[in-house]
Structure formats: C-alpha cells, structure tokens
Amino acid sequence: MWHSSRRARAGGRRLSEGAATVGVMSMNSQVTPVDLAAPDRSGPDGAADFPRLADPYRHELLAHCYRMVGSLHDAEDLVQETYLRAWRGYAGFEGRSSLRTWLYRIATTVCLTALGRRARRPLPTGLGQPGSDAADPLVERAELPWLEPVPDALVGAGSGGPADPASVVTERESVRLALVAALQHLPPRQRAVLILRDVLKWRAAEVADLLDTSTAAVNSALQRARGHLAVVGPTEDGTAEPSAARQREQIDRYAAAFERKDVAGIVRLLTDDVVWEMPPYANWYRGSDQVATHLRDRCPGGPGDFWVLRTAANGQPALALYLRGPGGAYRPFLLQVLAFSGSGRISRVVNFMDVRLFAAFGLPEERPPR
Image (tube, rainbow, N blue to C red; front, side, top):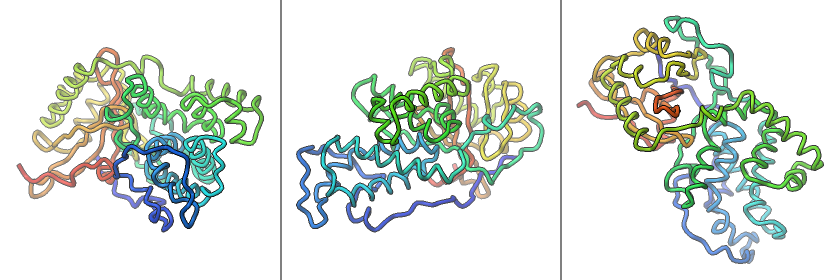
C-alpha cells in the first residue's frame, strides 16, 4: 500500500530579519521591469537600490541553487542566504562585474559551503537495480534526503519565461529531473564547474576566479564531470519529446485512466521499458508489466477514487493526484513528474509521495465530495 509522506521537513525555511527588511525573498511576488541604472547607495546601509536591482534575478538564482542541491526547500534557503549576504555587502560592490554575475558568485559559494555538510539527494534509480517483483512489499527509506521536484513557475521554466523560444527550451532542459538527479552524482566542485560552464556559459577563467583555482584545473574538472554525466545522465533519446499537441492528448488520456483506475488503459500509454519511481520508497521498477502489477497490487483506490490536476515541474508535465478519503473529500496523495519518449508514450514516472509539495506548487488542499 502506498502511503503519502508527511514527515517534518529537515532544515525548514528560515526568514532572516534582514532579508525581510529589504523585501527580496517573497517567492510569490511578481517581478516588474526595473531601470538597471547605476546603483544608488545613498540609503543608510548603502543599499537603497539593492531590492529593485536584485529582485529580477530571484527565479534564475533559485534554479541555480536547485541544480546544485537538488531540493526546492534547501534552494529557497540558500537563495535567501545569498540575498542577505549580498545586501550586507552591497555597499562594497565595485561594479567590476555585473550585479547578476556577482549574485551568482555569492550563490555558488553559499551552495558549496552547504554541500560540504550535506549528503547528495538521490532518486531510487540512483540506489541500485530495479525490483524483480512489483508485488514485493515497499521499502521506505525515510532517513534519506531525496531529490525534490521544483515548480516551473518558480524557476522560469514555464511558458511565462523568456520570450526567445530557444531560451525557454534551454531553461527547461537545464532543470529536467533526470539531469538534476545526474548532477547529484558529481562532487560539489565538479557540479559547480559543469553548471557554470555548460549551463550558464561562464568562461573558464571566470570559474577559476570564483573557485580560487587555475583555468587548467577548471578545464580538467569540466572534462571529468562531462565524462561522468555521460554515464549517469539522460540520453538524447531520453530527452526527445512528441509535439505539444500530442503530449497534451496523451496526458489527458493518462489522467482519465487514473481517475477510472483503469490499469490496462494506463499501461497502454507507457513505453515497454518505462521507469517507475516512488521516493521515499527505495523500490523502483522497469517495464510496463511490472508497473501494471504494482498498480493492481499496491495502489489504493478504485474507479472514481482519484482526482487528477495538471501542473508542471522541472520543465516537464506533472500531475497532482488526489485520493478520496472518508467523507468523500479528495485530499493530496502524490505528485507525478512525467517524461515522454519521442514516440509519444510515457517513458518515466517519478511519484513524489511528500504531500507538502502540493503547497509549493500552489495546488488546492482538497476537493469537496462530488
């Protein structure tokens, strides 16, 4: 039986008085156009213009910290720490680099410090081989800090992001779940080098300056990181997608099949070698036959017991599943992040069982009986 996880979050969000004062850390606030004129440090703390100039970079800094640490909640904390440090040091910012570059330097340093005392965040596929029998009991690993999904709206990976279609695609690909999971296999400094060089397109000399090392060392670390990512990262076929219209059609069919608890209908929409994961459970399965067995033997509910809402996570389609409980109300059950093959079928489903993620995605707390 699946059980939604409601464990207390380790390292909850901390709102520092300084960050609250300058007003740059509300993750739900709207970014408005700003005049990026010369900084005005005339305020009492030498940072009168800091909120206006720094606030537009919040979403991309959250995406950067998320790639580094693999957790939305940790990334929010680290962005908060970044803005607090930048606000305190803004009077000494000499403008030798852009404000954006300066903020990235601080954020990367903050992430590397945090990663020095934290374990990597895996998905079940990063722990071992797939289960051989989907009817076996599920093994919960509550002690592990699992990889978390991130809402598209918080990292600019949705359609409301950059106007340039190429930029939208690049942003989505840079936060895809398979890529972020693969990044967690890299040592922190290699991870930083690869992200700064291949995602943010920094020059090797800039990265060397940030990490206080040589350009040769940066190039060597980048080569090692790319080599490791080639082994554990997503393949080109694994990132291929059908047309948007075809994808929407398949998602609608998949959601409807779940609401009917139509296992055969669900399985028809999966690739033969589909991957099915369920953190915090260590069990994972490969193959549509295994998924069918799991859904029949382990998934609760029957026809009409699920209500499904569409959302988006990590630049990918996602679904929020609600399960009908006593009294008939539908309450959060799990969040699925989907990946598609080029054929239009679903090739990977990651089921995140922590129902507190629903709030981060702005999803309703429940649906009344229908």
